Every structure is written in structure tokens, then in C-alpha cells.
Length: 219
Image 1 (cartoon, one colour):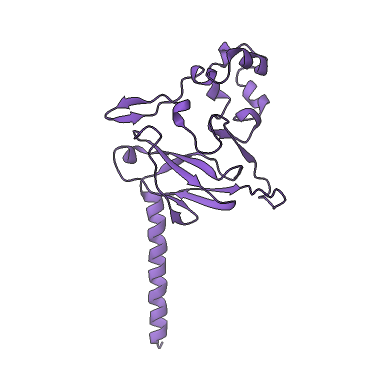
Image 2 (cartoon, rainbow, N blue to C red):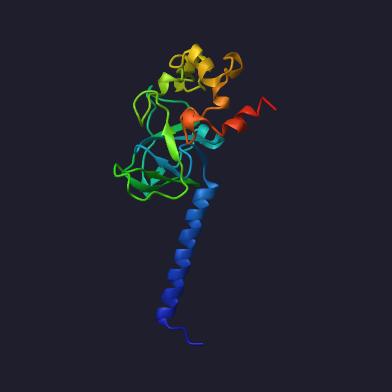
């Protein structure tokens, strides 16, 4: 069979493209991985100012370079948290997204969001719920220290989980909690059991349906 120069060039180009695609796939799956903690996938955002929160695996926590966040194919950057630096494994990128659809990638992790435009008549992704923002502070980017205590740890600033209910009672008085939930406050002290504190698609930042949440304690 006669092999022309054009055919050889085409074969080389095909092999090069296949190698490139394989390299991308390997970079995304074999490198250090991050779990996107917030926001969730396939939601409608009320504001384009959003905190992308990720949790790194052990290799990144030990000092490996984390993959940069990518928004619609454009690399972004990891930002210091409001109090100087933060000990891994938490990573934050403060995004300013224009109205419309966006794809966010961090290593192998991927999610899609849609920023609602001011014109409410524009078509939105069917079946995507609206992500309700936690009303603490201004909409969008948050001051993490409102709910999180900062503490020194090996020269950096660590970000422990909020201590509930004390962190929540700063804005939500105990009496209001009991009246709103029709329930004594003490058994509800672990607020994060039923509420997604960064934002949720359910009313009142619930992490699920009321019947499902209540059935965790009540038959």
C-alpha cells in the first residue's frame, strides 16, 4: 500500500492529538485532588460574587501545589482568607461571574452554575434550583470570621469548624430558634445537622426536606 506524505502527516497529527488528550486526562486524574465544598453543581446563583471553597487531599495539605481554579477555561487564583493566611486543606477563590452559564473546574472536579441576570424573563436552565445565600454580611463574598474563629497553628491561621450553637446565636437569639422550629433549643444545638451554613437550595438554608431531617431523630 502506498503511503503518501499527506497521509503520514495526518497520522502524526492524530497521534499527537491523542497524546495531548491523554496527557490532559492524566493530569486531571493522577494529580493532587480537591473536593469542591461550595457551591454545589447545577444551581442558579442570585449574584456573580461567589466564594469557591475547596478542601484539598493529604498531598496538597503537605505542601504540593494545588491546581488552579478554571472558570470557562480561564485560570483563576487562590486567595488568602480574610485573616492573612490559612492552613491547608481549605482553599478559597473569590469569583466574580458575569450573568449567564459558567463551568468551573478544579483539577478533576467540575461543576456548572448559572448567574441569574437582572432581566428575569431570560430562560434559565430547566430543573436547576436557586442557591440561597446565607444572609450574614453582604450578599456574595463573605467575611469568614463572622462565623469561624481564627487560631494560630504552626505559624499559619487555621479555620476550624464553627462552634454551634454559639456561632449561630450571635445573629439568631435562642428564643427565636425555639419559636421558629417549634422545638426546644437544646436538642438543636448542632445546627449544621440540618442547615447548610454557606448556602442552600432549600428555604431557611435547610440541607434537605423537613420530613427527612426530622426523621433523623423522630420516627
